[in-house]
Length: 253
Image 1: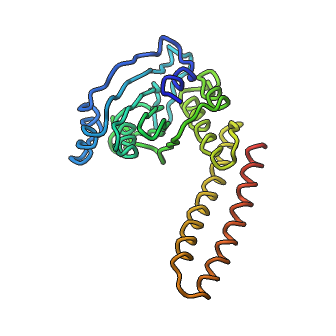
Image 2: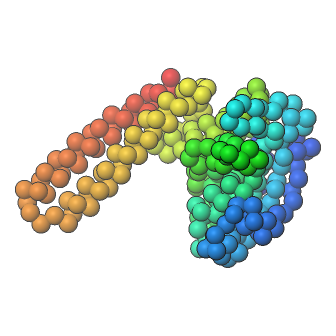
Image 3: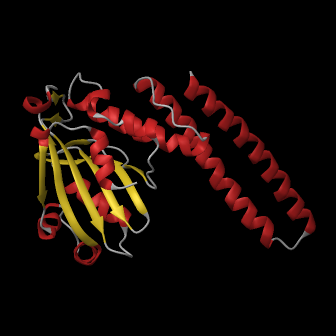
């Protein structure tokens, strides 16, 4: 899967395309990067490209405003990293630096990654924006036809720019869920997406617990304690299977 193929799948109008390189220094300045961050930017980033600007007059989708945010534009950016770069931190810095919600396509030695994050107005600083909630980041993007079709601009909600961006977030979230269920299924709306995400988080918490228990059981010297750990492990694995079945069921609802 290539970044070009993913961009093509978005089916953006030609009028939105910019394809302009962004200087790394601008990212460092806008993100208020620390000395360590600036080093990562200079040493880890190969190229940043502003691929497209989705404005109401170009895509026919109204802007969005509430007490927390004002979305007048959505941005599609490309980020190419050098081998060994710390993708997570550099991705976060870029989302923080751009004053618009960003659909970020990151290309690195590990493959293709998509990330998104809502923004809100900073408290006591109305002219600045900050990330609102967690950054959604999904790696190892492949060429699943259903996923690529679901990412097309025309398939997203057209109520306003917030709804459109949330549609992309829910679609990328559905791909994340497919890693657990084995099948990509788009969400049927915000409530459906939120419900599936909640179950996914429970599954991941249990996966983490399974990893911890396996490590403890492997190191345990006392037989009685080892048996107890293995019993707890089997119990957690059983709970995980139930949750995974529930996630499949919720996805098909």
